[in-house]
Length: 101
Image (cartoon, rainbow, N blue to C red; front, side, top):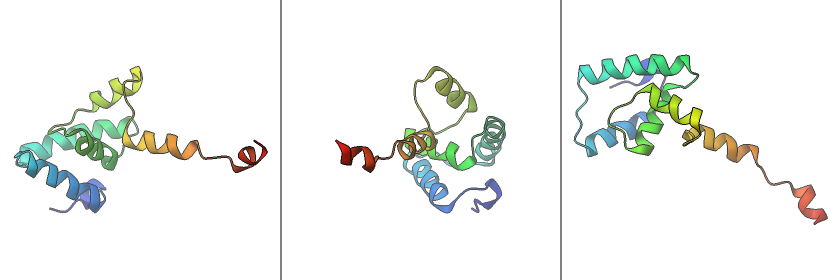
């Protein structure tokens, strides 16, 4: 299965496949079609396919609905893996302030 059509990196795609296999959740055409619909919705909210499938892997989701991410990000329940990484990168250690301490 090629992940290029979804604009997906190989690592996340392989992880998603491995997770689906581990959960004994076969990937049928119906699964692909439903994911495609939801991924298109997610794109409208600014999420990439890579981010969506990474969340599926991280949270062990067999399925995916865009609204899960949207609802959670609006009420602050959780941040996506990409949002957490951005937060970590934004809060870098300030060596100048540490030196004056």
